[in-house]
Image (cartoon, rainbow, N blue to C red; front, side, top):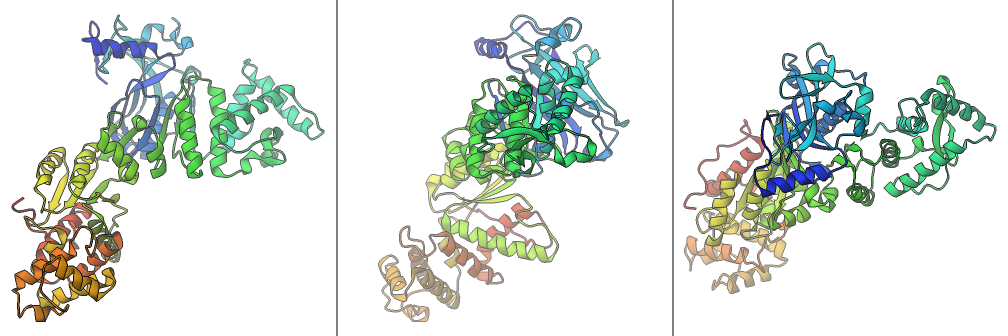
Length: 609
């Protein structure tokens, strides 16, 4: 994290940004740096200033959960955190783990002279951290967690001059940071470390409160109730229903039967059923409600796999609830296309990684293309690699190819397309596919578009997509997929191609009509050898290709038909007459799987673009 000296903001836009930082009363993370922690070698992230809900999306193993864990480790109040060798990137203990955040809206107890009042720095509008909180800068605190080969964590507040001061777990509790994951049961019972236990001890008398809880647990067997506990439980029930945890009507405190060997204690019940017996999704939501109550309004929450255990409608409702919170800053991860589709687009940030270098790209400034793509194919934003076919024909053909290639690789013990993080996308025809590719490439995923080469209007979009980092594969000049397939077929292969068209058009008479009307061929049957008495090979190929590729009456204009075409081609992999087709397909295969023993040499493609 770069720390500088400065005199203040440089322009009007910076002034407005600093004012926004100053107006934020709740604590916010504005920058996060992570080094050498688990799968992250390096991450430097400047968060959008007004963003309260941050929805991290992207492929698996890109570091999303690690980012949440890093935030929780840095700002949570745990004091007995254990680290091991595998927490170091590449298990390299010579490289110290560092997790560092720039915080604004620091809780008042941490700004007293005896705590960190004199340790504040200044944050400028461009994300630079400065030695002093001068006029025109937002006051901030830099908190750092380091772990060296001793495996002993150190939490500190740091400044530019190299000075550092330890920050204790009780002081970190002021950050009000909590995590929601699948380990929910601890938050649905009373203990010294649970959210319920802390709320019961808000007056500071933790020992008395827990003793009272134990007495109440024993007395509950005889029908005695505690008014304080009843009031707290009523509030928990209301908040859990608001979050969408369940339809709770009779939440009460009861004896925690699951820990009978550990002394009397209390847990939450709905009637006679312990809430710890509810489904995972409901338990997670109730855990969120309880921890949110304990943390207060100005909390930082981290929620891994937002949709875990939840039906789509409850996951979407939860996201809306989190987005409506005016104070808390919430970090969530998701792999749900429905959540991606329904989330506020400004909350979405795409996480990608390459050799441990992690990048996070916000969609807050997304254009219309990206907004439409997010709605139409949200799963593509969760992929590591995206292959976009021009239309349904290409989509089906690609699906057939990847199915076959996956079978080959499975037999050789190699990864599948799913393991490579692939999403296949229908580009909706024409130049839209390559426009989408150009929009997706800056997000950090590898993007390839397979498009026709018969429309010159696509050419400038191809140039822009390639400049953005996308790969574009096209057929020979002026060729579409059907004409490229037919371009070199012999009579027997062409006859088989027509038979495939009959299967998908439904009748020989329909295909014959297509060839006569659309292809303008003067023929009376579907026997190719008879045609060759009248027409040349090139003419026969041409009117078959024209009929097969017609926009409304084409033979392969849906995904299933495209898949059948792909299977037909794969059966003829060895035909020299399809070499140009397989040059493109081999290039796509290499793009997804990388070079391997199963990848044929692709050769040159896209000539005469």
